[in-house]
Amino acid sequence: MHTLARDVYLDSQMGLPTDLPNAGSSLENPWVFDRAAREFKHWASMGLVEILSEHQRPAMGELLFDQLSFHRLR
Image (cartoon, rainbow, N blue to C red; front, side, top):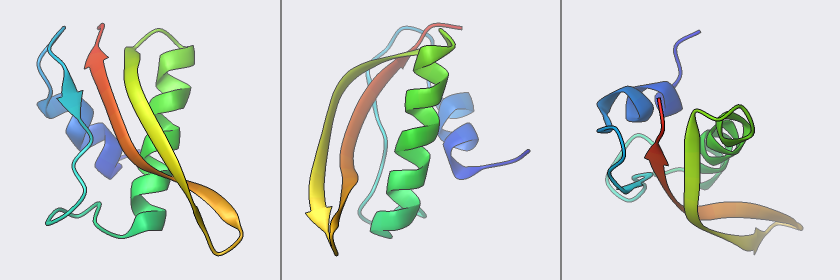
């Protein structure tokens, strides 16, 4: 299945730190960004990426990711 997170993953270079883009990108919506970040967290559990840093903030009674950096392992 094609997702915005997959596009970012495929555009990243192996082993180089990459920030999940937000402002000014298709991931600008906080819930869209959060969904993509959660997809990266899942991929980290599968060994596809390593999460270098992450941050969440409260929004409407829930915690949403608003920053995520990773590097691609495969």
